[in-house]
Image (cartoon, rainbow, N blue to C red; front, side, top):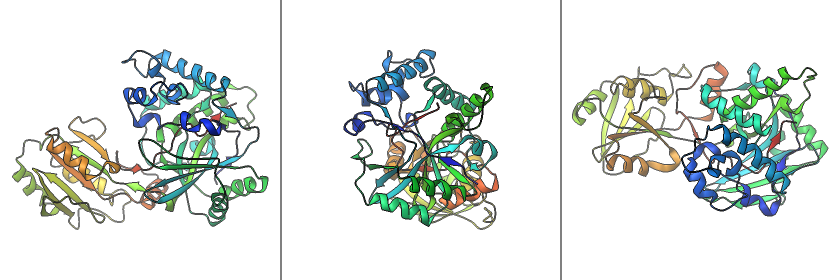
Amino acid sequence: MATIKPFKGIRPPKNLVEAVESRPYDVLSSEEARVEAGDNEKSLYHIIKPEIDFEPGTSEYDPRVYDKAAENFKKFQENGWLVQDEKEQYYIYAQTMNGKTQYGLVVGAYVEDYLNGVIKKHELTRRDKEEDRMKHVRVCNANIEPVFFAYPDNKVLNDLIMRYAATTPVNDFIAPIDGFRHQFWIVDDDNDINTITEEFAKMPALYIADGHHRSAAAALVGAEKAKQNPNHTGTEEYNYFMAVCFQASQLTVLDYNRVVKDLNGMTSEEFLKALEKNFLVEKIGKDMYKPKKLHEFSLYLDNEWYKLEAKQGTYNDADPIGVLDVDISSRLILDELLGIKDLRSDKRIDFVGGLRGLEELKRRVDSGEMKMALALYPVAMSQIMNIADSGKIMPPKATWFEPKLRSGLIIHKLS
């Protein structure tokens, strides 16, 4: 069963929230962060992308950069740009994209739940990326950015959240760049706090939706601190890390598409012919075509769109992995035809999040940068949970969640 706790959040004052908040550290480059921060000394980028405070070209992994993160975090608190709440409480964070709102509960997730599998993952993590985030958590002694969890739908929690959503939020703004609405409430009523804790305690599992490296780093640092403390009791704040938990049915998973540089020595005609072994291939023409159902793909090649439908027998609906379109396309197109064996390292392939649309796929092929594009039907949240429950791992670059959590609305200190 899932263990969570309220915590004393560190937040920007209401009048500063839009100056402080930012996109997550891993969705933009150092140079983009430098441009977005501009001359705004209150931007959270000075803590989560502190290389912007050094000369351009400075590595984000430079030891000075981590020290600068801690220095800036301290400065933000001393200047009153970030202030810690006096009471342990929960928070509600809502995001609205294209008229649809999803409501998340901001909680302290239990490190032990991550280590023993109550918090379930569906992606592999890379040790170098884990270590980068671990260094950041260590030097700041805080979870500066939240991770993104899903939980099974719960009527009691939904009713509680809707009661707060009917009141005036503490923060309410439209973010630059993405144009989405972000709202924030404080849950400080003791009865409501107890209700949230008790309802989560009934849940057999929580699911990492986005932020596998941040989750791993936060949990591993917490476990590290426990080992280093000879007087460890299990009640210390470092036993928890910050997560925003959304009801699974509210989440939007977008398609995560592929663009490839070449056809592995084949002509376009040979490639299309080879596809017919495992797919029904239908030429659509100049009009952009988006997959409409599971096991359907769209291909853009030589200024033409094609509909591909995987033939019966090429996938296994009873296998949580084998049923996935990312698995079908990886096995039967990228590997078998194009010789792309490792999606994580092969330089011939790149990935485009669904928010950018088919237009971005078309642009990258038409520019000559890429030879072909492949659009996939989005993975369902139920599929992600089934895979996590089965203990299996999804193929790389399978899910794209949108909207992304904004950073800087709340921070969790480890002591």
